[in-house]
Length: 548
Image (tube, rainbow, N blue to C red; front, side):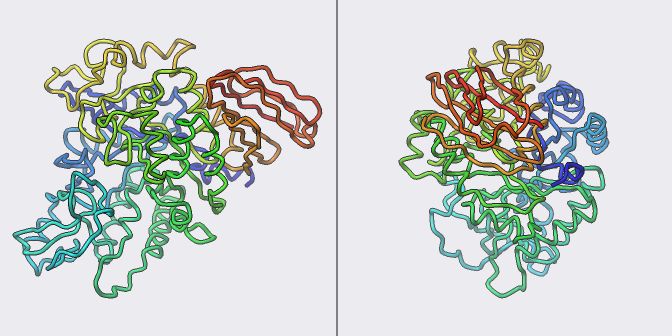
C-alpha cells in the first residue's frame, strides 16, 4: 500500500483508547462520570497519543449490565449529559485530531425497552417478531452458556407473552431477531443516526451471536451477506467509517467475519487468539505461544486489520487455551478463586497480575504494540491502574479513573456513598499511589513510557501495513519480529524472562536496509555485516528501525 493511501484506512494504524463515560470524569458532583467531564480530560488523551476514542455504551439504560442493556438507541443517558454535550465532546475530540467510535449493541436490548414491552404484550404487535419466542423451551447444551454460574439457561419464560424468549446473555437482555427485516432496517437507522452526528464507526458487540440464525423456517436471511450490506451502508454514509468486531472464535472462523477474499464485511476484529497466546507466553516467560499464534494468524484483505490488546473491559478470557494451559495462567496471575470468573477468565488488571514489576509491565505493552495490527488501550492502563476485587464480577476492572491524589482520585467531588462505583481501595494501588497528575511530568513513570510507546507506534506504520516475519532465536524467552514496508524495516524484540540476554540475529543483506536507528528501549546494539547483536535486560525491550 502506498503511503498516500494510508489515511483512507486510518484504522490500520490507529491507537484506540476504550473508556466508560460514567467512570472517567464527573463534572457536576453527582458521582457519575459524564460527557462534560470527558471533554475536560481530552488533553490527557491527546498527550498520550490516542488517535481514536472507543466509547462503551452511553445510551439510556436501567444499568443492570453496565449500560449494555439499552432502552433507547437514539439518545444519551441523562445521567451522562445531553445530546448537546455529546456533540460538544465530539467536536472537541475532532479538534484534537481524535476520531470517536462507539459500542453498537444490537444483539439484544433491555427487557425494559419499549420494543420488548410491545412484543410481549400483544401477539399481533408488529414488534412480536423483533425478538425470538418459543412455545416450548428448546434443548440446550450447558457448555453453550455465556455466563455459567450466573444464568442456567438461554431461554426464559415470560408470563405475559405465554412464551419463552431467547437471551444469549443475561435474562434481562432479550435477543433481537436480526432475521427480521424490520430489525435490520432499524439497525441501519441507528448507525446512520450516530454517523450523522459525527462518529467514525462502531465496535460491534457479540458479532457471532448477532448473526446467529434461530428461525425454525427458512427466512431467506444470509448473515454474512447482511454484514456486507451493513459495511457498504456505513461506508456510503461515511466513507472512512469502521466496523470493529468482537469475534471471540478460532482464527479460521474469525476470518469469515472479515468477508471472503475481498474483505468486505468487518474492517477489523479484536484478536482474542493472539491475546490468549500472550497470556500463556507471559505466564511461562516463553515466547513460544506467541510464535505459534502468529503462524496461524490468517492473511487479511489489504484494507482490513487486527486490533490487539492486553486487557479489555471484560474478564481476561482464556477460553481458547487447554484446561492445563488455563491453569498455568491462573496459577501465575490469579491463583485465588476470587480473582477468577466463569471458570475461564481473570478479573484483574495487568499491574497486579505482574506484581507491580515496572520492567515486565512495560515489556508486555511494547510486546502487544509490536503485533501486526492496531493497539487498543483500556482506560487507566496508561498509569498502571489496578482492579478493585470488591466490585462484583467483570466490573472489577471498571473502577473510576484515578486523576490525582486525594479523596476519589479527582474523579468526583461527590460523597463516597454517591459514587457510581467505588474507587480502587488497596492503599498500594489507590489514587494516592497511582494517578495521572503525579505521573505526567516524571520520566520514570508508566504514563511517560506509554506516551513514548504509543507515539513511537504511530511513527512505525510498517507494523500496520507491512509484511511481518517471526525471527527464530535459540533463547525461549526472546520474541523477535520483523516488519517490512516500502523502504522501512522494523525489528522489535522482547525478553519475556528476568535474566539479561544477548541476542544475535542474522539479517541477510542488512547493509542494504539503510541506516540503523533505535526507536524504543535500551541496550547496546551492534551491526556487523549481516549480524545484528542486541543486549536485552531482564524483561527488556528494543525496537530498531532500518531507514534508507
